[in-house]
Amino acid sequence: MSVSRIVRGVGLLGLTVTPLVAQSRPAPAITYTPYTLRANDGTTVEAELGAFEVPERRAATGSRRITLRFVRLRSTSATLGDPIIYLAGGPGASGIRTASGARFPLFMALRALGDVIALDQRGVGQSSPLPPCQPSDSLDPVQPVTRTALVDLYRRGLTECMARWTASGIDIDGYTTRENAADIDDLRRALGARQVRLWGISYGSHLGLAVLKYHGAGISRAVFAGIEGLEQTVKLPAYTDSLVARVQALINRDSVLRAAYPDVAATMRRVHARLDSAPVRLSTTPPGGRTPVTASIDAFPVQLLVGGMIADPPGIARVPLLYAALDAGRYEFIAGPLLQQMPSGAPRFAGMPELMDIASGIDPARRALVATQATRGVLGDALNFPMPQLDGLRPSLDLGASFRAPFRSDVPVLFLSGTLDGRTAVDEGRTALRGLRRGTQVIVEHGGHNLFEADQQVADAVVAFLRGEAVPARIVLRPPTIALPPR
Image (cartoon, rainbow, N blue to C red; front, side, top):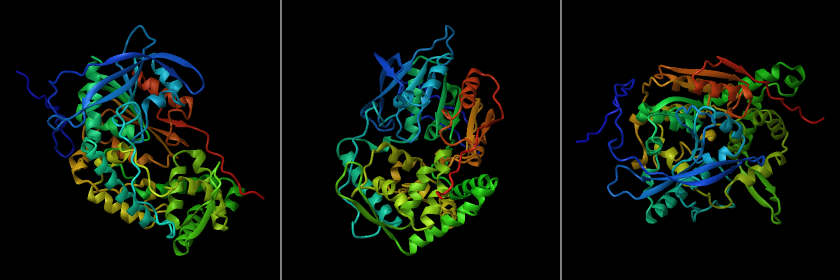
């Protein structure tokens, strides 16, 4: 007689973690076909494309099956270690596409430790993707594009798209990080592995922490960068202010830079206040287009644009020059990139990213803190858009406070956190590390969000940790070059 196995991972709040379903169910069957992975530089590697099926929502009786696909890169070692599963960020990034990009050398290096798996998570890439949806509603071309207008547009649009997906037979309540974590455990069992190792970034760290919380017995080691804890889907605006302060400190080391940018934060606030009091009309002709695109904007679209720039040092280094131009009234600096990224009428929803973020959600206390900090933060609450603005749109999707609550784990875990990461702050990583009794955080000085390809020192630390070796307490990279205004 089989019984459900309870994972006794008692959390800091006294919670007992229970799997979504009994672990006695049969492991999924994988089918393999030959696959050639072609890197962006033209290098090719022979691999295998694996496919297996999982329920769309495990708690739903008779749930439809969806297919997950991955690329397996066979180990180059005669002594196989635990398989290594890559967890892509986003949410919504493709692990298979990532393997052929800038992180390709690290994928290759990790083959010395064991088979390396590049997974497309549920709803992404080659894994039964949700059909993209463009709702019927659109922006009013006469009215300024403001925070209120964009939030209303996104909430109405996603509500319409969720109804469309549901009508087409998709169980949208199955697109949560808990289901995603159960997929990883099903993949482990399908591979026939007692344990696997994890490496991931950004949302991939969020997913990896959920795997540790709910399926930790199947994980031998894990290394994550750009840490997003289970309660950190929505980032705190104050950390963006701290980032700007660190950039100012770099500027102040050079007298010429200091004269050009004496107070970046004050300049940002001045520009935003001016735009909020008097929206500016912008116009640009897209590349290859014949008709100009025009819109009036307040500060929020600019804050959205800058929020997308500050993930890594090269983008952060352009912020002082950008705001110096805007402060001088030279809005042509942002007309092209801003108008081209704004929804031309209605936004387009991929499905998985929006649903995953809504499901991970935000607790009332943190939401109140975000709101308080946003009133005085240089980017307000734009960094997280469209969260927390979409929070509560579908209550049945929210995983609740128990998902976001702290937990304990004895799995060896390495966090890599960059001091110039404008997406996920070092201090948030420290918070997420609590309860991980064999956890280590390596600070990467001047490192950004996309750390795995940033420097060979970082890649070496990933390989060393997954091999079970010691890693440095700190890695120092060169600071970014901050451009001066043209003379």
